[in-house]
Length: 329
Image 1 (tube, rainbow, N blue to C red):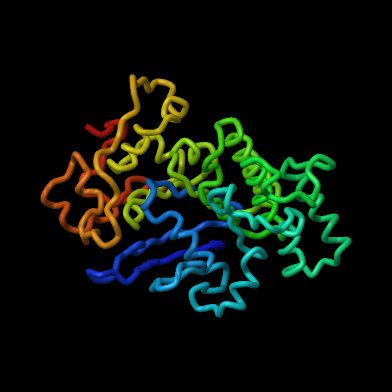
Image 2: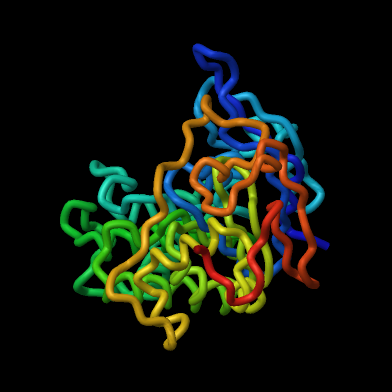
């Protein structure tokens, strides 16, 4: 049974020219203990998917579909019930560690808030648990006291505090939304290792959201590729990296600085680039969302592309999928 099951999730916002579709029929599931990566450029709907799951969409959003966490449909729960789930059964590491923490509260207060709300721990037990969590994420005493404020920490250290907050109540599902944004390469590697270590130790399901296929290759068992609010390719990490079928997926891979690490035989004098930009929500059509940037487009692409099952655990929504090893021309 899936821990998280998202079906036909559609999110729209009102616009001058009519409803703007931010997410359009997104469906996926996450099993207990599974690590799933969601990858795509900025504006593809990755973070909006996470916010929809958390019940934190901006005002004005219209939502259709189903988001089930176990037996609970999160879209039908009242706000008090959602508050009981957030932090306890599902938690999220937000983007931008430099701004995500409350600047006027100590890190100990922020890590301990969920312990007080969800586990009703007393002051002494809560203080012990906060110290244990900070140690676990690599902020040991006495150098990193719970009485420190966020401005006294570096970006990587703040990110570790955010991970401690998310792990405080040992949730069933952890969503990591671009958890290495604005971090240097060495700190990025340490943060990723930490997330994998703590989720594996607790058999916690993980949804890793990123624009970087290299990070997905390091962290995920299964990969969802999003473009313009839709999932255009999905599969196990092994199958997807062995044969990327959607031109967009292949373009992302070619543009990634991790490409050489994933495939040692790849040699490029410079990184490739996908021409154009992701269409704005109000500009999206009912046909293939990538058609305007795709070198393989044909007149057929004005229609919604079918989902093609390429192999067990690998599917693509494209009229002209790439053959294994073909690459984009």
